[in-house]
Length: 221
Image 1: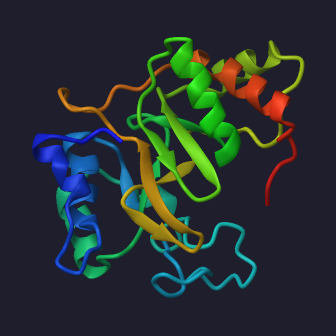
Image 2: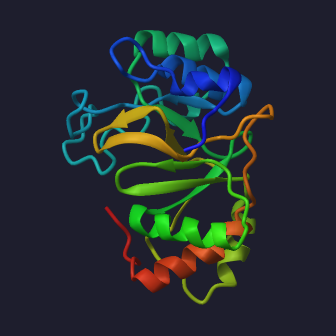
């Protein structure tokens, strides 16, 4: 994992209790990088499985917006500071799509293999978010027509490959959800006003091919 220098080091800072500093990370995303964020619902209890939302069979425990809803995502410093002052351990949810990045995600085992293939091919990657079961490659914003044209060129697209575009979301580090810790597999690099991310076209072929070879094709619930 690459270290984030300067003011971005706040993303990896620790409180005296050993937990990452959520509010500093949320403020960096929102104010320095201009990524719209909002607090996620979080796990039922810290360090425990389950979701704090009313759905007893929640498919994404702790890893989704609830109150406020996704449309409340913002880059406003005062709002972000108020949210995490009142809910200091809330997961940080990124609303995907412009002005923030989009994402492509796949199961963790296949994702680890895909990153090795992309590295060998010399593909420049942006930040990669890892959860216990899925990894999310952050990519440049794309439109639905653009994505549709890209996927139409493929004979087959595995159902376990997911696209997080306009109207979607991704939980960012440092967060904890009902399935465990959210961390950086590839941390954002320093040196620019906001992290660089590749176009979705740069990574999709390798992700599809990796999932096809590994047989991870069925959508996960």
